[in-house]
Length: 606
Image (cartoon, rainbow, N blue to C red; front, side, top):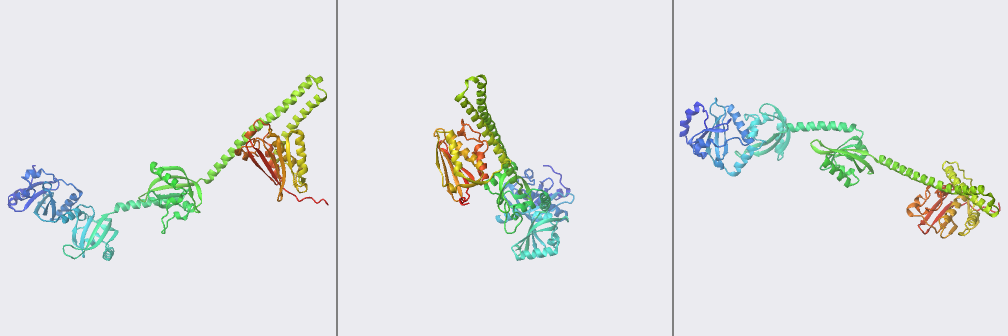
């Protein structure tokens, strides 16, 4: 490789060749050896200069670049540098003691190296090389602050080694004295302090100080390692400022907001509303570390929320059951996203209490269901009324037409029979209309109950007699308690409606057996009137709707009825301060029990 050499080197070559010392010249800019004497070629195990120049001497690490920069700084001050190097001729390590200096000021990039092989144990070599390659600045000072040793990173960045270099680096005497005292009293001390660099600028460094002995002299010394944390502190300050801005925004929001660590779920921040509504434990505490897991009623919901969050980065309107500050469960809608909070991966979540919304939804759904049921009942009622009115009207119209066309055919018993049938049809229609009217008046509060003492035995006996006149084939078993104790405070006409409906239904829904039982018993201050049949019965899942207006059981299909009788019965019983219950089994029959409060028996002497 042809390289222009300084005239002074060309002139010195004959003398350098006769030396018993290895000498070579290294171009730091081109990173190559430009000349070497015979001793240097032997040291490098090179056949000649050309073969040595073919080798790669380029800088292979940041540590080497830093080391050469330290050399150039020393050369600029007309100082030489003497230290050990590890060379690698053909890949094998060789320890040499090198004296390095600038050869010619007109050639500032040309470094003269004089090398002598030395013997150094492996541990020492490795320790030195490790120290040279780390970016951490490591320095050893004596008690006067003089530099005993610096690694390349420290030598390049810190003030020159002359005088009290430690005070030059840490210009606050009070702080330096404090650090020295702290290091003497413990194994070491770590602080973040202001440090002056070689260029005079001040930066923030994290420093560690240790009191040791100088291994060369045995004297007390100070070992200091340090690194720049200015960027980190600026980043932390920026994070703090942004966190404070975020907290200000969250505090102004009308929703509870919580920030928790993604990994540990430790709560880092909760705004005012979250603390007020969900407990002071959300705030900071020196006694314990609150976690967001304490919010959840069910651990599975918390796990699912975090799974979605990690998969998608955000969660919107996630339904969960949480606990408030009194540990009461409530329905909540969670919306969350992943954020970086003060350098820590966190979850930002808003909490919306939707309990009242769900309650309204449930109430609305119940109302809609009720409306649907009413609509269905009304449909069935219209169908029933249409059927119930059409049949008797058709009968009436048919008889009337025959009377018009052939009046001469009707006389005597035949005429009486037709007239009675007309009256029965009209009575049925009037009864239906009365039921509708009575229910309507009850609902509108227009029906007045004429209260007074009513003897139940005569009233029930009359209804039984009427029913047997109409249905002579029906067997009615009657069992009454003493008449003088079966006295209630009520409206006799309305009570006739109550028990008349129950007896009529018992006959209507037991066509196969034509048998029913009517019993009256006394239980404390109540009378229990039981009407029982052995007819079609009522399915268990329909019994809770039995007293609903227009409702008819599925077992009543094909049997005439309006679906209003039992609704009217319950309303009238409740108006009398009583209650009604049903016990039924499908295909086995039904038992209705009416409970009414008793009045004391009337004194016959009055």
